[in-house]
Image (cartoon, rainbow, N blue to C red; front, side):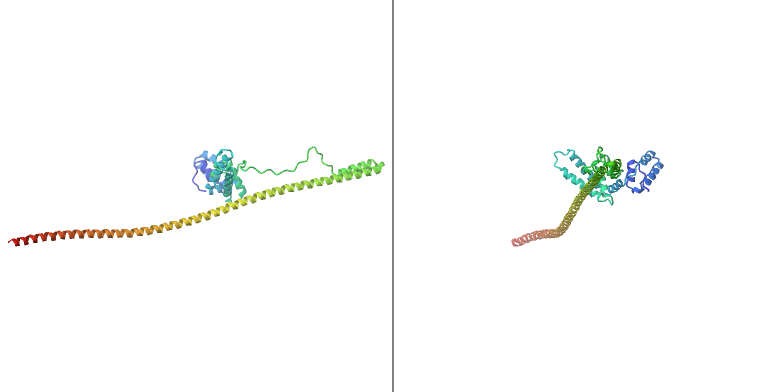
Amino acid sequence: MDPADPTSLDEAKELLYGLPLKSFVAERDFLVKQIWAAGNRDLANEVKTLRKPSMVAAEVNHIVRADPEGVDLILQAATLLRAAQTGALEGSTIDASELQQQYRAAIRGLSQSAPTRRAEVRAALEAATIDEASQDDLRSGCLVVVPTTVSVFGTAPPSPAIAPTSATEEPSPPVDELEARRVRRRASNDKDQPQADEEGAAEQAAAEKEAATAEKRRAAEAEAQRKRAEKERQRKLTALKREHSEALGTHLAALNAEEVAAAEAAHADQAVADTAREQAALEQALAVVQVQRATAEKARANAETAKANAHERAEQAEAKVDALAQIIAAFEID
């Protein structure tokens, strides 16, 4: 790394948090040495405290730096959504649900540029835009950790847990213990063998019944757990399908908008070309008119000159006629 030495902590953060994650520590320590050698020991100590970003935070930083307009859009949408939810926009025509859709679309759009961990990046973007203390770091691409905050969309209800066994309920005795009790009773009642056999059979039946009941209970709990897991899986699958459908709709809308924009651009290009041709024709016609005007003005000037010359010659002829008339008159008198 051979950058110009930063003169502030913000400049150092701007430099370090844009580097690959695996080289952060080495580059930070090297930068600390550079700043220390330059004589700015206070800044060197501050830079030394900068923490390595988490993997998701580093991914978010790279995405934000590549698309600053995208993160500005998310932050604006989050601000409007927060205002709508807190009632700050009461009386406005802005619909909170529409703002929420715009916010989620902006989050999805920016997270799509992540090469990996898109779901984590999407969650991190949402958390950082909601947490006002993290917004500056997010905007500058200097996020260190993903903040823990409550989503503007709420949280999914927790999966129901398996109901614990009541502490006051005594566990059923195992079959081996019941059998041992039966043997002890039979040994202590050898004199009354028929009664002992009857009690043993009853105890064995009770043990078998208890074992069967326990097995049914375990099977019921397992089935309930399976159903809960299946329900959760279906919920996630439905959410994924809905998200996929929304993403597909956004993609199709973008394609349609692109086609409309392309058609409008082509129409505008044609209009420009037509206008250019009309302008060229008008300029050519203007040039012809200007030539015709110049020719007419020249002809008019020539005609004026000829008129002046003819007038002069007429006056000269008239003077000559008058002179000759006087001479003739004189001769006639003589």
